[in-house]
Every structure is written in C-alpha cells, then in structure tokens.
Image 1 (cartoon, rainbow, N blue to C red):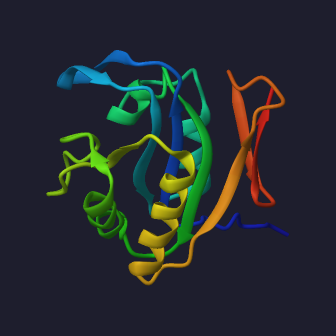
Image 2: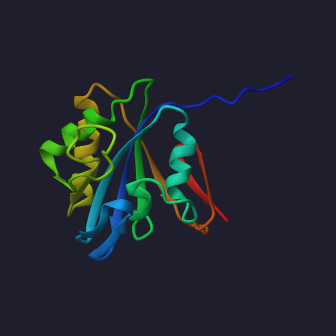
Image 3: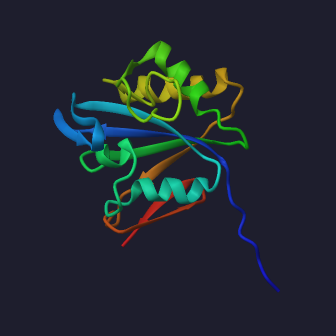
Length: 167
C-alpha cells in the first residue's frame, strides 16, 4: 500500500523583521539599503507550498531569489497563506502596493508588479493590511507563527498551524 503525499498549492506572505538598517547585496540587482522595521514578501508556490515555506526558513541554502539574499540578514516571524490553485500573488501585491511602501523591483522580475516586498514600521498594521489584502482579493488567509525555540540554521517543518524549527 502506498501513500501519496498531498502537494499543497497556494500563495503566501512572509512577515519579516529587519532589526537594524542594512545595505544588502541582492544578487544581480546589487546593493539595496533597507530601513529597520517590518516587511511583507508575497510569493506563490503552485508546486509545493510546504516545501517553499520551509525553504525560506532555512539559513543554509543556495541563493536564488531576491528574498533569499534579504533573509540572510532578516528573520521570518509569521506566514500568512492561502490554499489556491491559481497564482494570485500579484493581486495581493497590487493591494499592498496601495497601502504600504514598496521596495521597487524586488521579487517581481517575472511579472509586471512594482514589487513583491513591502515595508511598514508597525508589525500590527502590516499584519492587518496583509489579511485585508487577501480578503479584498476573495481569498481566505491562514496564519502561522514561526517557532524559534530550536536552532533555525538547518531544518524546519510545517504542520498544525505552526512552523516548527528543527535542529
């Protein structure tokens, strides 16, 4: 008897904290200055939501996307996601673009969005703006906090509404 693993498809927003202002080299894009504060990164994973989110949590990984470089200096605090078969991350980015400060040309090289990374001084305002953006796009968001009670440098698991880091 075989058990086929269900591959979750969806879109997500990472709530990220950068503790101090930094200039970070973002791959081919070059150096970008980021103020300290809270950020929202919008992405999609139509071939494996769980594995994509777990990948973002890993510190040791090949640096491929803009967000990979940013996450070397910042930390994910929470993930807001929605299960969907459609890539609606640009609809969420458009909503966030109306209400938050975009980091222009970040994470959107494969679409026409202004950005997929947004800045806000307040984590509370950021979280509410993201949730409202999902709802305004007729999507129903779920949220998960990142449990950093264990070493986050190697592995992570995604289950039961919480992302657990595993040593």
